[in-house]
Amino acid sequence: MDDSDSESESSEYPSFGSYTVFEADRLLDAFVKASIRFEIECDDGASFTAAREGSYGQRSRVYVFLDGAQQDEARKIEQDILGASTP
Image (cartoon, rainbow, N blue to C red):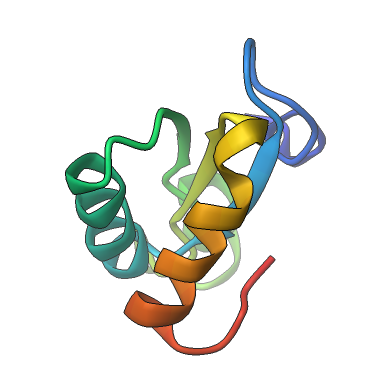
């Protein structure tokens, strides 16, 4: 997957941010509970890590895209769940 595609825009929603798998799991669970509409794209990091570090998945990222009308509510949830802002 090309990172430039992931960080631009998904089919329907603007980019919200990228997260580790652990962060995304917690954040997306909260989005579901709050009825926030989102899409995700996953990058397992395999091409980079296998070629340069010899370990799989250390650089895995989840790119989150969500309804622009719900961005403010989502940022509040992000603050509650993850603490610092991670745009």
